[in-house]
Length: 323
Image (tube, rainbow, N blue to C red):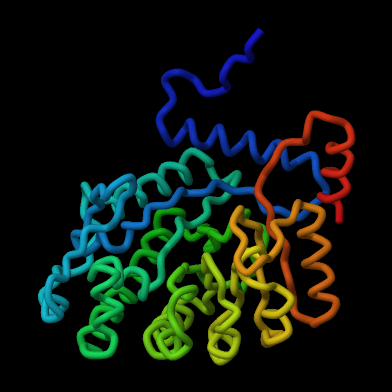
């Protein structure tokens, strides 16, 4: 007989999502680990660009943020960044506030995934045109990056307000590493496709500004960032980097990483450069060995998952979650 859905038919979207996430927390409660339970807010790439009036549009089988910069001078006539009703940024903030209200202080709410200034600016300008303008329109690029940085800072402040100051400022799944001085987390997936000079000149100064505003910054990227440890080590406010150990060579990065910077290592389904896609036990062993060999703090992250049904895999799963 099929099991009845735990989600009531009249549940709001937020209620339904909270119930599904509570199921994940219940799965994890059976393990002896240090995961910090809380409600994830979801992800909308257009959150910060929507503060400037950007919207998403369908492109082939995907979506993108519709660029609002048609010529470099357009950066000087953008509307002020605001959280307006009817925009994605307003809807996301409302979702965070409702989740916090329904949780009644019993569980915290995590921030939404915030793209960093470089990523936001590139999407607002149009990625190809933005990258092509880095050499010829530096003044306009830096002006837009400054606007995006201030908008991000303002949105973090709004998320803190919506949660009565209890926001958990980490989105790097699955929300395990939350020291008091973690600062706030942002994503910059362009790390994987641009060179060291671009990161140093056009990304780092603005990440540092965010870090200065909140006592630190943690940076996530999808893809390979083995070319960037020197640029990351030079950052004064950087608390941690987050990447997949099947996309960035963890041991190689850790050998070059300043020990004051933590590494949050998760797994993805994509392999870059022949790096292995490990199971839970393999990932934990890899992270533990890397920390032992390099002295760098390496936190192994893995997604919520129920116990496997078959006994051999269930036993391995339980051993892995207790490492």
